[in-house]
Image (cartoon, rainbow, N blue to C red; front, side):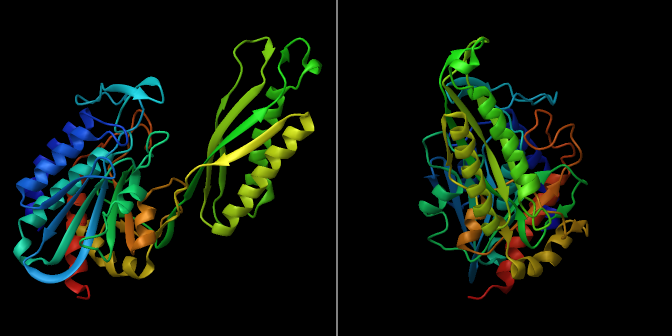
Length: 401
């Protein structure tokens, strides 16, 4: 298997660079999905397309009876203007939320797709020895679907990605800045639950020279921002688990000397504890309402569709530790700190036991979602292929039939 992963490495690099140069936003991964589907079909793998909008599901039936396991990769890019300077850097633009934006693989999903394509080829080449079935899940819209659309892991699950056949476990990886080829994770909660929110504030428009004649909604929104910072830092037990409440966007007004009627704020809540999540949400709602009423206006907060906590099944994680160590040549760390980023891989983990782990790719100038994020050392991709293929093989070797 190791020799096969090494042999296919140049193709994995080629796929990754091609996908990187041609990124697509969530639910629009048409070119990427076609590339994946054609590759799987050439390998003699059963293929379903159009799952969860543009998702691709491949089913590789081994030559020996056994269980079913799934491997997942996400395919979407981000509305980011790439500044890596790579010869294959993206120059793609598209329309996003009514605006023309640049698109880039600023989170490494290009690497995830190429790695899983490589693992599929390695496993297909040894199908006669595989005791069971491997399901390949190439998922759209991990970063979230367009406004008003369904997408991502929830829609993949809804449309049968984990059925016919039904895997008993699922594995996934994510490239991150770190030691090249090192695999890292933690058992139990690893990545935060993510709740998107939007706040609508209503005041009374007035001239900027006469704020007493209306309702100063600009000051109102400033107090909301300060109150949110205070909730996270001063009103909850910070020693319990990490909790972050961020205001990321503030929109309101059209002219320097007019205090407007409306302001809209948006941001994200990151938590690891369900009860703490409820508590913070209640405090946020109380703060918005109370501050707005004190100014004589009104305010409400609306919560979007959440991503649950990405939580690695402890038994599965312990079972697969030797496998991941073998894949990485012993370069592993299984007690990393909590990660306050979120992952919709968590939806699969609510259905079946799952293990999600990170793969170090060197140290780019920026972290994931930065214009400077890039796979600095592509030799890490070979480790990713080994990890994906080995987790499937070793799991099936001991799976109950």
